[in-house]
Length: 279
Ligand SMILES: Nc1ncnc2c1ncn2[C@@H]1O[C@H](COP(=O)(O)OP(=O)(O)OP(=O)(O)O)[C@@H](O)[C@H]1O
Image (cartoon, rainbow, N blue to C red; front, side, top):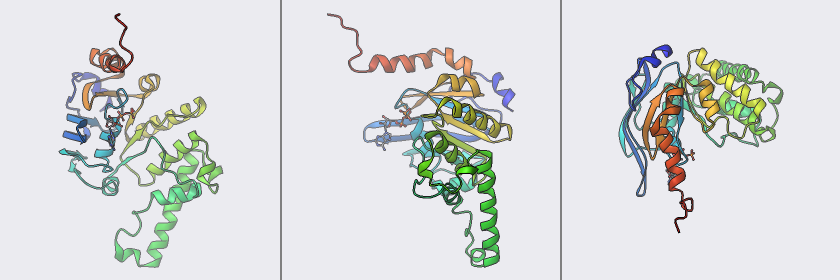
């Protein structure tokens, strides 16, 4: 349905042909600051959606709320037709929605493989009865290891399998973060600045991993500040400013959208100390 996106009206909150995630009336405030106030947002299944907006626009907070890492003050959201409002991150992940973090969650004093196995935690032993039966448990253990090795191979981290994760470069940590997210075989991944701090060679590799995931049918939503990256791989772009969705559309339409230009320029103009001197 990706091709259908170009036919939509490019309005904030526009209905998508086949939405996987649907957000309604979600608000989240910190003290007096309304970090997120999203009236309606649909994320198309099987597409790459970029979430852009100036610093403090509410992008990470929205990711946190829908993925179960933070609570909303109001609103609801559904994933693949099922209500997931207020569910824990663990339960949301079991439904197929997984997020990664700007600062990766890898544990430096564990090996790369152990980090992968930890990400699968919760798959095993979900049903206590089964978990108590050693053969079943062992079979699951083997399956989880096989999945981890397959992903380490895919992300070219096999060489590092038994090294401490702390020895990985920044870019390799990002790859590991993505590989870990895939351990639970999600249908949608939310990537928070997957390219930040990554050298140009690995950026290319990360970008092709993201498009490969989409081409295999996964839904990808990612927060990104680098507009070249956004333009290069997104099927659709959502722009937030001051907690709200201010524009949506295909990359080139969004780049020209006055609300988007305002969001970025307005931020600069509002910055204390950047006012022109009228004296
Ligand atoms: N735990 C928190 N406590 C207090 N304020 C918070 C908290 N988390 C976020 N905020 C505030 O909410 C607003 C939105 O922050 P958020 O991190 O979601 O923005 P963002 O669009 O992801 O920004 P960036 O691009 O800089 O990561 C900001 O003003 C931020 O300071």
